Length: 526
Image 1 (cartoon, rainbow, N blue to C red):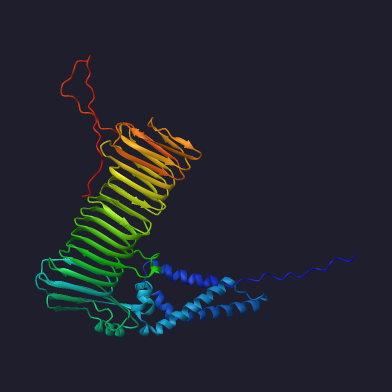
Image 2: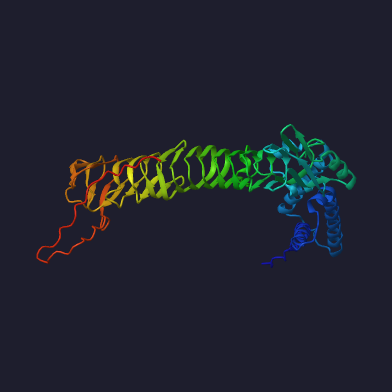
């Protein structure tokens, strides 16, 4: 039998270095920029990206001739390298077309569609800056109207009888001469019309071009302010007059304002909600605050007047409000309330909450509502929340469609009428050991347990019910659960401490403890 012949095994085919070369070049450029080297990467990429294709072609030619000389197969490009090249080509073609047609781009419309910041503007030109100052006399008690299409606005108070405007302009253009032309046609304007001073930031004086201007405005005391900002943040500090602010894409931060604040803040494009966090912050406002918001977070603190909120919010904080608070807005994030002297009314599509006063704090999200130090009457209607309320005072009415209810009242005198209902959940009620109340407890599918000896449940199939009187009766406690357990517990040591007698009696006749009068815990709405 003849021996088998030897098989020829070709050498393994090598991979091209094109892919790693592209990554090395891009990574090196970004690394240099991170170390502080001023390299306009995006602008240069828009203009010179075809050079990358030339370099790749030269590398492939060198690999081809090197392989022919060594008698081995020409290195191939993997699927990842080909995909990377296609991305570079398509992105380069698109950005080049936009760069050459940048003068025809409607920047105003683009800014209302996507978040155009300075980094993106650098794609279409280098950044040139221009600074300046304007001033205008204003009658006492006048009004200042500010309009800015793109840029941040800062408003301060000062003791001069004039309006001063400091501006810092950023122009994105292909050359210095082009930037100078744009600067000349986009000069801010400050003009007096009767009793009002108009401040036109004028970033679109040449049309919707690549211009953004930040302004800092100084106002005399007790000056009314009307402000409109299409895109940019607004900061108000120590303004002594009423403020009416309208924002479309940006944040509002107002502090130390003596006057009423009215804000209309909207983020119209839902695409920006995940990447941009617009918010309205009002702190230390001596007056009323009215906010109409859409897809922004609201933080209100230290307000001496009333607060009214409408629209839709990504989060809500109300902290230390002396007046009433009314919130008629859907809240898609977390809610935190603290120290509300005249209570709050919140109406959303899933929850309605109202109470008279809040000494402690309350937090609410999509699943839970927890509060402490709430004064009733409390009215809560919700769909899918676990409710946990501690140190409660006054009447409480809770209707929960799907969730557990946990209520604690640790004062005999503060105990009010309780009406707790959940269709799918358990109820846990903790009351003072010496509380006096009438009770009616029932569940269709669950058990009833209690530390109060006289609460004995009668069962019928899966249902259980109990009713009666504890102590001297008085307030009414009604608890209902369709499918859940009900537990009523005692809080030991929660009753008021009896006063010490003025005169000590002989040991043979010890003093009798004073009677604890039952008082209903109803609290008036302030």
